[in-house]
Image 1: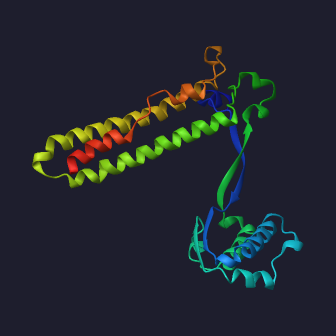
Image 2: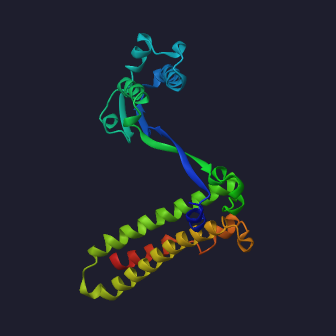
Image 3: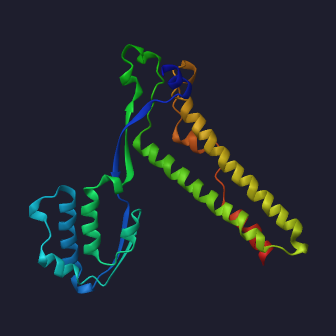
Length: 237
């Protein structure tokens, strides 16, 4: 077990999973009742959080919620998506809180592996953390690159199919090649980021350097989609 852990440079294991619900509600409210509805919904939210009987909704609250003009639900729980009344959504959430079999995993609790090895902990990989603001910057950076990747893949897989004219063959080929190159650069960046972060978990002194967010995000230059879109527009128009 120790050998396997050191080979993978894992520093934590999942010891607990917290289950939950992803839910987005879009409500259309009458302008003259927004304050009343907001107050009622805050009360119901309080009851969902701690089930304090003082906050339990009553018939009067139901009459306030009946004034909601329309309700649209987006959730990872299928039957919630079909509901058109806020009260129905609320009651379903109460039911789900009592039945974890219908929940989706939402959060994981990680425990340092070295806690389980006692005197052998000295041989374990070293966990080197980043500041919370650095983690947020890095996360936003990766999300933006991932969004780029999806957009480029879309153009590569679908838009190029529309460019079928023989006289556009050379331009189409150039566009395809540039898109492919950029996608490969993004994938390489993800791989390099993973390698760089994992290398800092090793207990070899040679690797004891925590890269800054600047180092991580500058492994390759930021890619401007506008440039590749100019090529696409030159082909299509």
